[in-house]
Length: 106
Image (cartoon, rainbow, N blue to C red; front, side):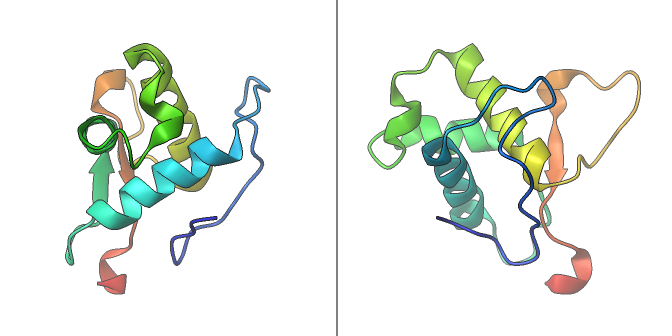
């Protein structure tokens, strides 16, 4: 299982009660962990999806998913592990960005 320092692992179910398979969790956290640059504290759903799409053999659980299913699973997993960077009305769901590190952790 992949873990990122400073993350808090919560329940594996989303608020709707749909369980998330461990392999999806591991692959999303792996993509996040291996894509962050030294001073980077934020990551978007689009960036995670591109990482997974660009290397399907490294992320086999996501290989056969439709784009909608892939985005949904990424969002569920990221919401379980990280706070959204911006919460509020008027933020389109395609602009989901999570704060994965505090600035002081750099």
